[in-house]
Image 1 (cartoon, chains in turn red, purple):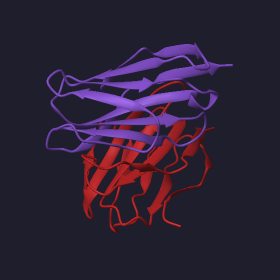
Image 2 (tube, rainbow over the protein chains, first blue to last red; image 1 turned 30 degrees about the vertical axis):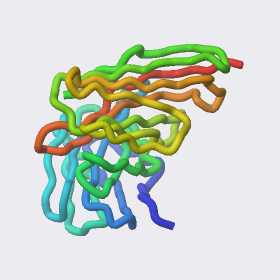
Image 3 (cartoon, rainbow over the protein chains, first blue to last red; image 1 turned 135 degrees about the horizontal axis):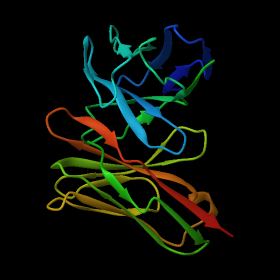
Length: 114
Length: 110
């Protein structure tokens, strides 16, 4: 079945450590996104990519990094520079830059800093 | 810049109607609507394109006023399953990034 997969579902990290969240899609989508969601809050855009080897910062990119070496993969690294990383992270993809097609979301990764 | 949604929350009885609004300060190419159940991924409801085209697959309607950069989602004869948080997402400018509002929490009571 085609879809978008995030792993792990739950992740615990010690302060000061970097951690990488995985996002893989087999939908042949060009565009991929990373969003952060805090309790009771909306989805805030961290990074997005419209094509392989290219990505742009979203509204809250500080303390995060991404790569897009393959069309199907868009991993997100939460660095120690991110002051408040505990949140629910959602990855999404769409056929184009989201202009006229729906975005498909993964099931999310809940990151907790301990 | 995030679109602005209103109201922030709404409670209604089964069978009642609701309207959720979304506005942006930017010229929009498209407006997306999604519903998220607690702890789950957002699910696509509808997309409205500049020029009037709509794409959706649920019994929910929406409007898109291109001049005012506003969209409204209409939920008629609500069902218990309609409960959740509704997000509007907007695409504007050459960056083509999909930016979401802060959400509207909808609760349908029996």
